[in-house]
Image (cartoon, rainbow over all chains, first blue to last red; front, side, top):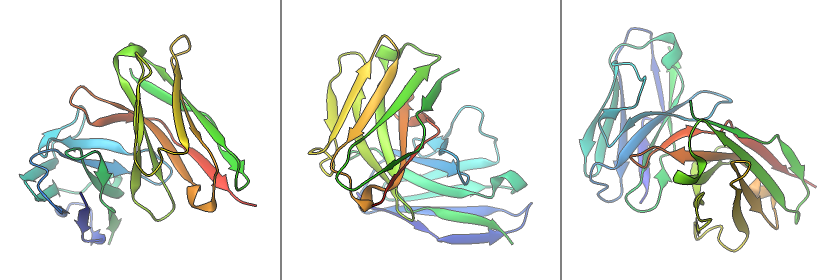
Length: 105
Length: 118
């Protein structure tokens, strides 16, 4: 299953709302997760099962979608949110999207 | 708190093998699988497979199954990934990860950079 993320780069300012997209080549039902990765660090699980926040993840992060189209929303960007975000599915083994870089405008 | 601590960076020549370790702590080691994922420069993360830390059973991704071996040592709660016949395309950061109860990858080790260069 191929996951395609858009946009490749998103330039926003702190306080703005971010909307990131992940599209699957076939249905993954709700079995999609979102990870945040900062340079030189390991990925951090943010959202799993499409819309469940992982332990300790701030409420400004939310996920939605099912089937083939998914969205990660960050309601009001904090400085520490500027990073790369990846989606991942586990319906058919495990594959990852190519990432969306969220950068400061 | 669950922690996965990996071995340090490696530089290898083409054709060599590399063995990366992943020391687990903060939970009962034999209850959870350990997965391995790699990220080559500018590439997507690639899932390589898993090992059942309890019985040692393994599952390898088709791409790697001919030259990767996962092992574990329950006495030291450490998992290992060995990759043979390295090429420059194997230059990547290799991560061990433990799935949470729902099956998603959390937490991850800090990553081990493997550089393959002549």
